[in-house]
Image (cartoon, rainbow, N blue to C red; front, side, top):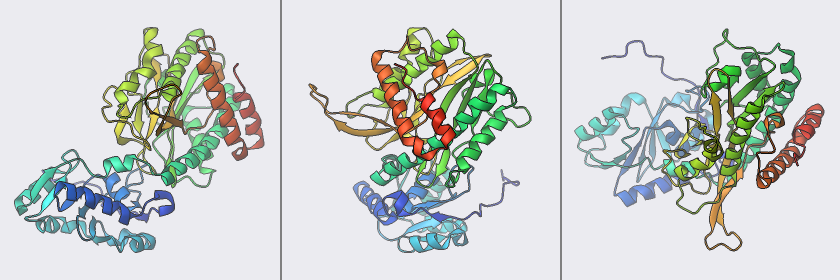
Length: 450
C-alpha cells in the first residue's frame, strides 16, 4: 500500500543547540556513543528516534508542533563521522559550521545506499523505534544486527550541570509568567466573562511576554468544571466552556525555552469551594508533597514511589487512573523516557533525571483536580543516624498552590511546614520577575498557612 496523500517533506530550519545550553559538545557525546559501541563490538548504531538524533548532534528543529525536533535519521559510526539524513539546505549556517567536524549531511533518498554500505558490519539498533524496513535492508546487505537500547536514552535523561541550571532558570521564568496569569485569573474569572479559550490565550500571552518562549511544550489543557474531570481534555475552539464562579478550573501547560522545557498544573477555585472539593484537593496535595519529600536508595524505580502519591487518596477510598509522573527533556520532548513514576515505572531513578509529580482526582461530570511540579533527582546524601545514603528530589517548579482549596486540618505539621517553605521560596524567587501588582498578589498567595 502506498501513502499517496502524505504531507510535504519537512523544510523548516535545523538549528545548532549551543553548548551554553547543551552543556556538552556533540563531539564528546559521539565519543561516548563510540565507547558504548566498542563494548558491544558494534561498528555503528542506527538512530531512529528524533530526540536521540537531536541530543547526539546538538541540533533542534520545528517539524513537530511543540517539540523542537527535526525529523531525521542518523547513523553513528564507531570510527569516522556520523551521517545525518536530511536536506543540507535546511541547516542554518551555525548548524552547518558546528556539524562540519562531526557529521556529514546525506540526502534522505540515499539512506538505502548507506545501509547497503554497512554490509559485513555489525550494526546496533533499538527494535522499539527503528523501522522494520531499516532492519530488512540491513539484513539484505549482509550486516550483522545487534538489538540493544538506543545508546542516547539514558545519557539524555541524565541532565548535566548546565542543563540542570538551565532547567532552574526556565522554571523560574515560566513560574513568573504563570503567576502573572494566576493573578489575572483571580481578578477576571469571577466576573463570569472568561472561557477556557480566553484563559489559555492569556497564559500563552504571559509566556510570550518573557521574550524567550520558543513554543508551548504541548497544547494547554485548559479545563473548567466537569471538563477538568478528563485528565487529557482537549480544548476545541468554538466549543469551549465558560469559566463559571462556583466551579474548579484546571490549567496544565508548559513552555519550550532554549534552556529548558516546563510542564506545570495548577487547580484554581473560582469562588467558594465545597468541603468535598477542599478534601479531595488536599489529599492530592498530600500525595504531591509525599513524593517531593521522599528519600530513597539507589536502584529505586518509579513504581516504588507511585504509591506515595496515592496513599492519602487510597485511605479515603479514592484513586486516579494515570501515572504520577513522566520524564521531561531539556529543550526536547515534554514526555521523555525511560524513567517514570507510575505502576509501570521499572527504570531506576538516577541523579540528574527530571520528572513530573502530578497526582490527581477526577469526579466525572463534576470537576477534576491535579497539582503538578517538576522534580530533579538529586545526588545521594546521608541522613543523620542512617546507614545508607539516599537520593531525593529538588523542586524545580515555582508557582503558588491555591489556598482556597486547602484544608489545613488534613495536613500534618511536616506537610504544612513544607508548603509554607515552598511558598516562601516561590515568593522570594519570583518577586523580582513579576509586576508590582502581581508581587503584591504573590505576597498574599504565598502567606504562611500556619
